[in-house]
Image 1 (cartoon, helix red, strand yellow):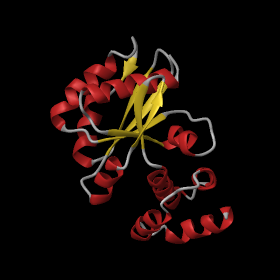
Image 2 (cartoon, one colour; image 1 turned 180 degrees about the horizontal axis):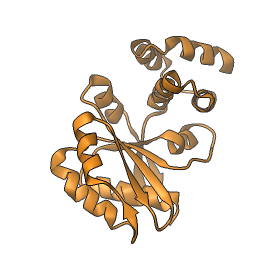
Image 3 (cartoon, helix red, strand yellow; image 1 turned 90 degrees about the vertical axis):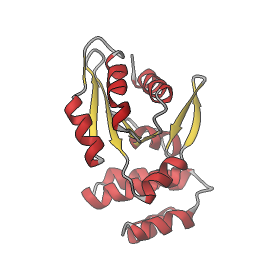
Length: 186
């Protein structure tokens, strides 16, 4: 198994349980910007407590040796945080981020975009929402990787809804960073 097949397996599980999701992070950058390597798969999900056990049970069937902490899943649902699934057999990791109840989190999942990968519809965050997510990560970490990812998407995606990005960047206090990057890529 590789990241590509893991992506498809995770999407099948989420679809079968009717758990809304979107791929984000490095995989989404490779979809909307320049292809780059990544060490894990990042997925935002709208996971309800009622589906947690079925979800973790399905994940555990992906590989013979794996790790997912049920307590971490519970806390992530309550706190709208993160938990991990590790396929130890194939040395692969998935970071799941439970979306919040705020308006933007709901909008982001509604704006997700389906892409056909090996005959399977896989949902990705929109390129605009990927830019916004990377702006937040840059704000928290001042990471050059985040800035490079944003530039990559801005350069390649010619039909971005810049008005939408600016609206939310202003709300998340990242508008100055965005405007600087927009000047650099124009």
